[in-house]
Image 1 (spheres, rainbow, N blue to C red):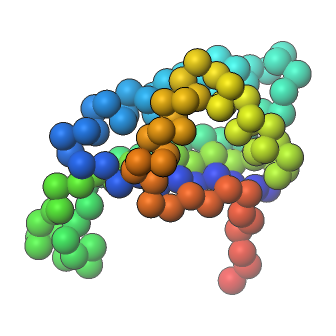
Image 2 (image 1 turned 90 degrees about the vertical axis):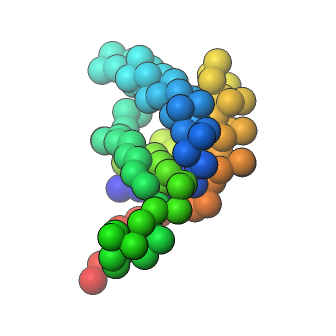
Image 3 (image 1 turned 30 degrees about the vertical axis):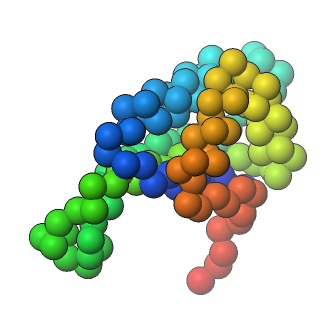
Amino acid sequence: MRYINIILKVPSEKIEEVEAVVMEHANYIKSTYVEDSGLANPISTYFTKGPEFNNPANPEDGTTGTILLSINETWNELDDIQAHAGRAMGAPHGERLLSVFQEYGTLSIGGEEIFKH
């Protein structure tokens, strides 16, 4: 299996705007990758958000005022990820999604594998 993990670091005053674009992508995934679509479907997808802590080891030290938002997708093959990225960039929300990634993305890993430990 291969994975997409993208972390966005968004100022709290921009989170509604960024979250709306991410939700467009979530809805795109739901409507595009249906059982009879003929496309390689993701194995799983999930999106998370939460405050960035000043000290992750001690949340009582408060937050930075920034929200961390993650996009996580699991696919069977690297080719599936590449095909998905091409389709997503051509979708109606594609330019907005790319803009969000470029402005707020702090970590973007595409196609990685789970390492053994």
